[in-house]
Length: 139
Length: 141
Image (cartoon, rainbow over all chains, first blue to last red; front, top):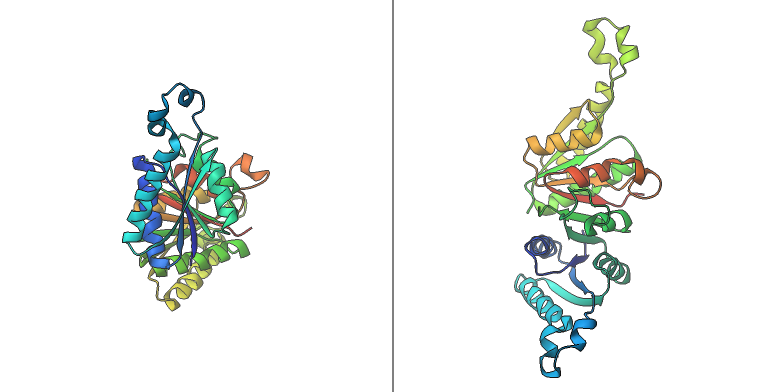
């Protein structure tokens, strides 16, 4: 059960807990874990930065290093991993990847669910996903 | 992974579909499955019934039959289970059993998560917002 699992990645404690739950699950189910990171490109501030430091503030490199760390952690548990770095809204990015890879499960952290924030990422995904959704308790 | 899993059921095809998947999940995870059904007693009918027969007039009987059948199904799959019948709102029943049994996961079908009922509040929506543990929402619609 659950052969194609999509999880959102971010370097916050809540996202890490959701990520660990997804790794644990895929380690048992024997499927593939798709790790998605989304960010909004920083256009205005990067223009004001000298060229030699531009890499340090560009989110691309940071996103990639977070993704690589997470992927390495999952692989150390024997899990097959595919990373996806996307631009744009995190909820949309997770859904886009879920649709593209025909996911049977999306794993997300619960942050924002209890405060009933209508636009929270888990809420948006829970309502719109075509597949199963695991909301991991993280707050 | 998940030691105490709560699943909500009724006798609808979508709920039974979610139950099948919950059994499969519990089998993979290795935990105990707490099978919960909620029903509304019929107060008008009950008022005309002598006290000593009141229990048999409520839908306890149907609930118990359903729960026993599903518990047997779990056993057949090698999953240990406990059953809980509650006369409460389904979302309240799921959350209170989950709290009492220190559940680490609640499994529900996604009925009512999309479309008009989303606004009014569905069982999976209430559970997703109010649960004190993780929630797995399964597609059944």
